[in-house]
Image (cartoon, rainbow, N blue to C red; front, side, top):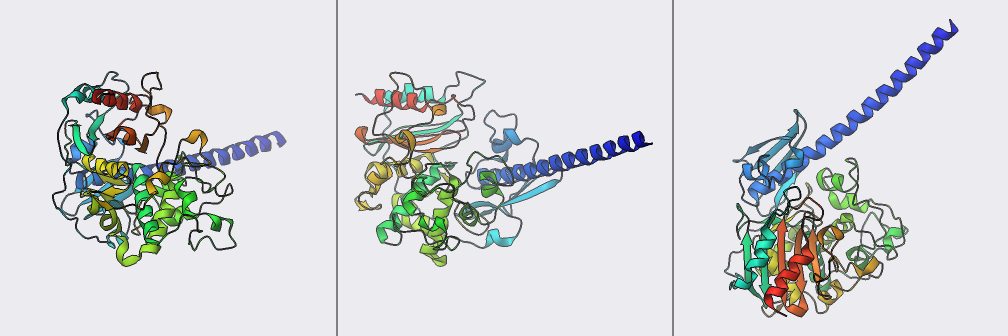
Length: 451
C-alpha cells in the first residue's frame, strides 16, 4: 500500500510539473505570437501606406526581398479604404496597425492611435542637384550584386553626394527615388538633430539633469543628463538584445502604448557617465522629454517644422506610439535622397543653404568619442566605427579616419566623410552577417572619385 501511494504521489507531482511546463511554454508562445502579429501589422501598414509599395511586394513569401519572410506564420488583412492592417496567428494574438497622415502607422488596440494629427508637409522644389558620375558605375554594380545566394545583400537604394551634388544613384527593382524606406536606428541620429535644435534654442541643456517625473531629486537616475543619453552612457539597465516578448526592446517598440514611460522605468545599473551601453530606450527617454519641452500643441509637428521641411526632407515620417510619442529610436522613414540631405546637413556643420539649423559646434560634439565608449566607437547618437558584421576589415578597405555614420538594423547607412566632402547612403534588407561590407563599398566609391 505504501509503495502504491508513493507511485501515485510521484505521478501527481509529475503531472503538476508537466502542467506548469506546458502552461509556461503556452504563455510564451502566445506572447511571441502577439509580438509577431504586431510586427507584421506595423511593417505591412508602413510598407503600403508610408512607402507606397504593394502588399505583395512587402509580404509575398516567394520574393527574395520579402520584408516579412521570417514571420510567414502570421496572417494579415489590409483595409485599404480605412488604411488599417490586422494581423493574427491562427485567429488569436490579433493586433491592428492604423495609418495617420504624416505620422505613419501605429500598433494600437484602442482609439488612442487617432488622437494626434500633423500639418501636411510643404512641397517646395528643393531637390538635390543631380549630375551622375559614370566612374561610380562599377561601385554601384558591386553594391547591387548578389555573389552569395545563401547570404543576400538585398541592397535597395544607394545615393552618393560629392560637394553637395548628387553624383550617383541607383535603386533595386520595385524601389525609386520617391520610395520612403525605414532607417531603423538611423532615427537615433535624427533625434540627435532635434535635440541639437532645442539645445540651440536654450530649451534643453546637455549638462542639466533631465526633468522627468519618474526620476525625482532623491532618485539616483535624477543625475542623468541629455549628454549621458546621447552618448549611450546613462547607466540605465536596458537589454537591447533581449528577445523576451514580455520585456526589453521588442516589448517597448511593439506592445507598450507609452514608449518613453516604459524606457524611463528602467533601473540604474551603473553611475551615469561611467558605462557605455547601446540602448534604444535612452533615445525614447529623449523623445519623451522633448514632448514636455515643446508642448502638446506643437509636439506632433515639431520634427517637420524644426528639421524636415527646413532641409527639404519632405518624405520623412517619424512614427509614434499609441499615446503620440515619437519612437525616434527605430521607426523613421525617408527616401534615399532625403537621408542624403540629412547627411549633407552634418557634412556642412549644421548649415543648410546658408541657414544654420544646428547650433555652432553641435556636429563636432556629435562626432566626438563618448568618454565611456570602448575603442572610440561612438559619439552622440552617431557611430564612429562600423560593427564587424558590416565590414570587411581587410587592408585596402580602411574607412577614412574622420568618417562618422548613422547606422540602422539590416544594413542602413548614412556615411559622412568631411575630408572627402562625401555623403554615402545605402539602404537595404541585409539579414545575414557579413553579406554587406560597408567599408569595402565606401572604399570603392572613394577610389572612383580619385585620391
